[in-house]
Picture 1 (spheres, rainbow, N blue to C red):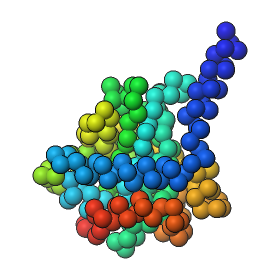
Picture 2 (cartoon, one colour; picture 1 turned 180 degrees about the vertical axis):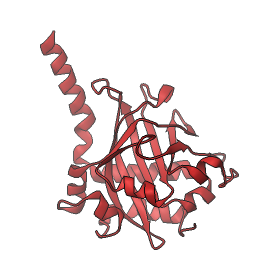
Picture 3 (cartoon, rainbow, N blue to C red; picture 1 turned 90 degrees about the horizontal axis):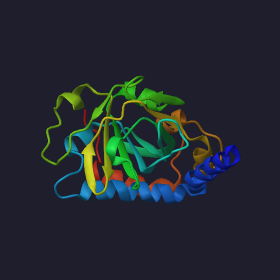
Length: 224
């Protein structure tokens, strides 16, 4: 029984981590997810809120991981602004937490907006927890939604999810965001820290161009 269980855990882990060798694919998928969300005629992130954000984190295809206590696992990228320009992607992992009924047989796309310097400092750290280390709230949805909601004015991070075709703000308290060292190494060809990428000390790789262009197309400038 123990052997069988151990084998199942190993197989499950290997399936979730099989995408480890394809950072370019995840970058393309991240750009596609953002484009699809913002192209929705009756949904998407309000432009006023997006324009105020300092960083955007996109994690495509978060899945239920039965072998992980807490349940969810995903890999994606954070992209931050520097003097109004979008920088290079910093690879991140998402784990733990609970995305409620949206997690099931299908995967869930997660988008986080980092709204201020403190949230950006947390993102630049090795690991932090939403709701504990950084205040987080479900983000408002819809092109006509006001950018001056209580959530957007006070939260350090606004969180969204898309599953089964539905896009909504969702609370992700307890979710752990950590640096993905192996992914960064593949993207940049050497060991780099997320902090160096986030504060603009590392030149963006060519593989991140599509995601940066998609972000710039929707939110080209930086507004306080």
